Length: 383
Image (cartoon, rainbow, N blue to C red; front, side, top):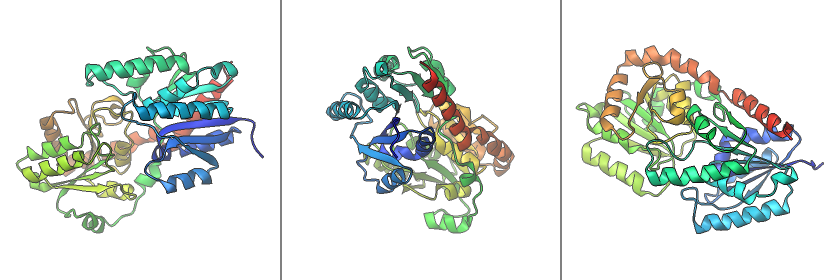
């Protein structure tokens, strides 16, 4: 039987829904029929099958998630408008800056008809490190967009403070979209066999980074840091993630590594990240900006200390000297090199293990689900 309540979840790329599948379950438990709109340009059939299994209808709209004012996004905006005209949604939850802005703009007038609109920022698109043009552009987008929704949800303290300076009357913070702690903590893996599989000798210190290969993720800085070390041959730097922004980034990393004698392995997208976390010695998340950074939390679940930049959400779980090392300047290879040297001592890593395992509890999946449902109930109950 069809519900008389309809909800729309909007994200940039369809693969992003793997962070949000539980939102479908939450909304369906609240009596909503759920649609998901996203860009499926990478043909993720497994994602679409999972959406269908959970009872959600998928609608494809292409968008450019790298730049807001493009022809593709103008066309996407028009498709959003048609969708919202054809479907009578009671609730719209839009995620990430560009899609969040386009959807809110396309929703003009719907709030007067009783539709509730929630924007979830998975990391504001600027930090104090951003150039003036980027700060100005995205501040204007967020400022205007904040007038077009009933609530903003952030996933770190810094972003919540920034969002509270805008115009939306309701600003909330959740502790991320939730990590399946047991999946990354309770892992049995043959370490020697797994290392052999990915080409990393057992006597090497394995530094693991997980995340798309993009400018924002800043993976190259770790290779630059390793190049500064006298004993760089002790280390293997492993990066798991798809290209995002062109192959020139990974080519640049590998070219630099070859020229400077740094051992780097690009493994691409992996389904065994939970196992790789347990064969790593040091985790690293060197992002220029990061709403939270699930990859860092996943490595902490395995008891692996993390080197992380002191930006946005990373500061919520990388505690200097307790669960890893924070790097103040994400462009400073020498600071990363010092952090790597510090964590190269196994005794230091072992001492941090219990703190790593303890800090992840607040980022559990169930905790996030409870937080989100509470916020949805509160927003929907407001006249």
